[in-house]
Length: 181
Image (cartoon, rainbow, N blue to C red):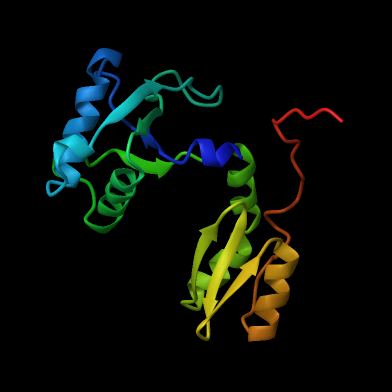
C-alpha cells in the first residue's frame, strides 16, 4: 500500500547543495524539460519537492536526496524512461533518478539479488511487479516469483545455475510499519 502512495514520486540523488529549497522546483522543471523536450510544460507539474534527511552513515558534506511528486503518472514514466535511455544532459550528468520505493520493497529486491543477477547473466528478461514480486519473461510466458526459494527452484527447472542463493537473504528485517491486532 505504501508503494502505491509513492507511485508518482521520483527520488533524485546528487542534486547540488547550491540549489536552495526555494530554487528546487524550477531546477527540477528545467531538468525535466531537458530530458523530455517533446513534453508540453503543462504536463510537467510538480506537486511538491523537498530534500530528505541525510542518513546518519553519510558524511555531512554529501548532498541530501530530493523527493518530488509529479502530478501526472505518464509524465513521471516519461522522465524515468528518458533518463535511462538517453542518459542525463551534460549540465545534470551527476544526478541519478530513482523510483521512490518503501523500505520493505527495497529489502525484497535486495534479497532477490542472486536470482536477478543470474537472470541478467543469461539474458532473461524480468521486471518488478506489484506488490513485491518478480515477473520473469521466459519462453513466451510470464512467471511470477514471490520468494527467493521460488526463484531458485524456477531457475533450476530452466537449467540456469545460481550462485549463493541465500547470500542476500541472511537476516529478515523488522517492518517499519506498525500494525495492531
